[in-house]
Figure 1 (tube, one colour):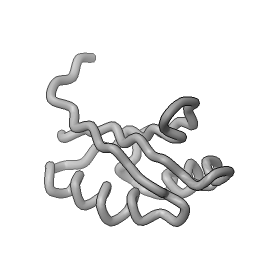
Figure 2: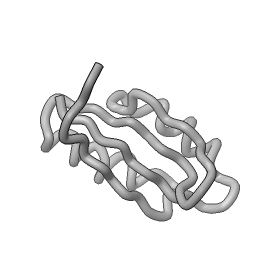
Figure 3: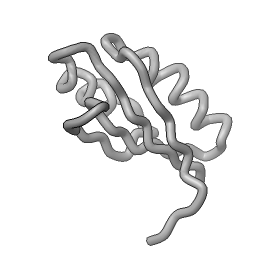
Figure 4: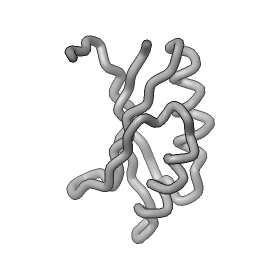
Length: 79
């Protein structure tokens, strides 16, 4: 199953609201508020690569107060 980590820049002070909104997206397995260049990191998994791209484009990036994202598609995974 395709997996990606999405690094999210938010409007100032809206990090908590973005975390709450990410909880409502089924494909988001985990999300964390972080310090540094990005404000939130989300772990997103879907059945297909097309579905993963759709979730990031039409659900994560469209959240109110998301300023920008950087999506890192995982090419290998260990357990």
